[in-house]
Length: 422
Image (cartoon, rainbow, N blue to C red; front, side, top):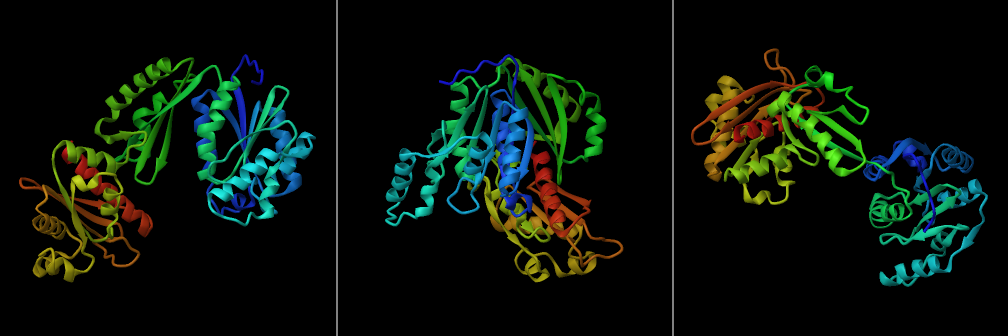
């Protein structure tokens, strides 16, 4: 075990390596994942750095990171191709020789043999070269091992770039390694996210603004997504019990102020919350969609176990299908238009009759950019809900791209259903 003694919290830095990240060809999800995992064991991430596959700039980035941080993580550049230069450049930055590790060579060869691949590319054996003094961790998914190097009171850990390789390595090897070597902090950081919909960010801010500066140990932040506002409560404490207590106090106050605008927390989605409510109330659901093109049904069926409450649905995009399948009257369409309260209700009633579901949704609207009128501009959407006793229809006016309006319409439909079931 490496011997480290820290009196303060650990400061970490993550260096993401790859020109494809700088150019925006791929989305860098590794920094978000790593930052959350490190926070959970009391390691504060102070810097995120991104550098391309440039030898000089990579050496400079590593040296700068080690000058200001206790633990430096690199992600990417550990593969067998010519542009995978991370370990070579780390070796240069640390003034350590690269040595050939026979155990890594054996591991790489075994990786190919297990997959019944007789031809082992010579290039893959480049990955057996690691900086002198490194410890390495076996990658169960790929051939690139992860390494850790001790530098006095500092540590550098190199991780592969692909998330499917990085995440298992961090979970099974790196986190236990950090804890074993007393590299985790003396405090823990916990976060709880309350998810809000049906109210815009500026209104949420008015309601909670006096709570945004309550720190320093417990903080509240507002983060906006399309159709959703997240309230993140973060607590830094000496133990889990204290952190949970501080989070619970603030959560109770937020729920008191925002009420039913809060639809869930952490990993909840509108569709998963609706699914739980349908099961709890022993109800089944069917859906008739027009402007959303099946998006609501897609979201509903993305939830595991949705077959227990989702009867089925149709995408009745054309007027012909609305009339022939859902039995929406031609006179109704002619009089009120396909985008109207009346047609939305008839669509819901039609699909409920076909499926014999407890509840049905009907959605029709103008997603744009064509099809608008003065009275019904782009973003006009009608969402209806019917069961054997109630008929509800709501009009919305959304703003944004075609895709935005489709997503906002699906949110509105799911939230109407959530409110009804609640």
